[in-house]
Length: 296
Image 1 (cartoon, rainbow, N blue to C red):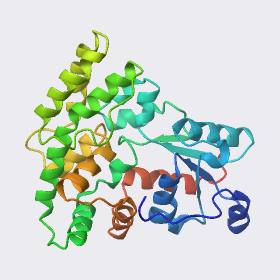
Image 2 (cartoon, rainbow, N blue to C red; image 1 turned 90 degrees about the vertical axis):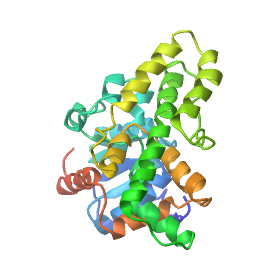
Image 3 (cartoon, rainbow, N blue to C red; image 1 turned 60 degrees about the horizontal axis):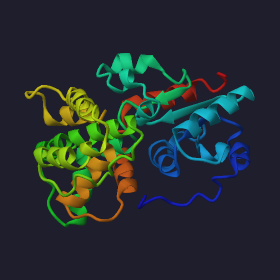
Image 4 (cartoon, one colour; image 1 turned 90 degrees about the horizontal axis):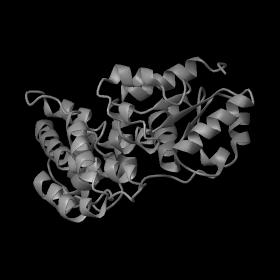
């Protein structure tokens, strides 16, 4: 992450405890997530909660490590919570929840227990794909005037639609235990049709014969996260980011459309904080944990 500062005390939680007197811990998937939560978005709440990468407890990163870290802490009698990406649901093949478009029903499902917050969007980067922040940074780096936000969100919506086949084929590849296509897979294409043609010619023929029908099902499922044509583009982008891969969207917007080749995720996180647009879904969870420090 371009703006991430090293944290020399990352693997020394005792120092944190002595500083803050012991506060509830929220485990996250990676150092990058730790930076966004602990050093950008919620640094003003570090007297009430502590963010730790799961590897400080389990020696590995990722969603499983978060769940294991929280479980170990709670068995020891320590208040602990976790935050994992929506893509963990796919890794566990919980397809009904993966495909749930009703956010209330999704939030109530709690597939990994009440102490694990499963993000509504696909991954952390899906929250950094904020139209205003992206435009602010690209205009600054490219020394251009910022465009109207409606234009920015229309561009993002086009990218989201191009990425529907990308999300769909990755679901199929996971189902068949094959390596997924990368975040930059669609960067060479300017429309959804060309992405689909490439997948149909080069990817699906290498899979079992049932893969085509599975792909068609996932195409329909991912597209159902979109809202109607009359809905403002910003709302449609946010809705699609529940299934579109956030890293892939950032790749297309930054690298393909605006020729920004440096990692700006840290800049995006700080911009979102500056304009007080931290997603309420995450903010509410942090507030809940901070307000229930002794709940084990």
